[in-house]
Figure (tube, one colour):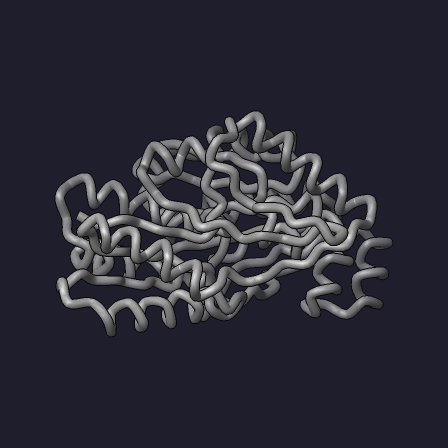
Length: 299
């Protein structure tokens, strides 16, 4: 047997992580100098949504937020516990081209394996993505584990899905993208005045890039809906994931419209994780699904 790990950027609701027996290693943010643990394993979906509202309301009010990495020592501690239970490790990481987290986990794995005499294994998979794109890969890994597959069999099956896992999203306010250097401050100011809404995606190399720009929030939501419906493969077998930064009503609108267009196995709809959500800001909404690749057809 083996244990499945994700960082909290994987955005899994606590009930989902428990259902699929996935271990979540939490980021810790600084909010106006106060430490906030990004993941709480004891919250209900309703409580997570309420906590999300509080967090993104604080962002709207201009609080100072600093995000950090999960330390190599933390990864070592978590992975060692799996070894102590005589289990292998599978870790699905936030894209290494977004965060240094994958490297922290790699260093931890190298240290543990150099001392390991039991033959236990650690497999690391860079999701080349963020949020529920990571989480969805972990869910599929758990389903495979329940079928009796080994850590190597599961990892070898999940790795090809990385290049097919799509994440598309839009933001509420361009200033948060300008703070991370994705767009210039002057462009953000003009874009907000003109109500320009970017449609962004994770490309095949794990970077966040602009797909296209549209005018107005409703046009942005409808573009996301069409991108999913036009590019998803075998939707009746898929779980479509939605993450929103205090944009619950918009997320329900998206679910309803997708259901009108295609037959979907299920949805996960949850508040945007605080780590990556801090970089994109309130009212961001993102959708995650498997397509034939990450080269999206235009909608």
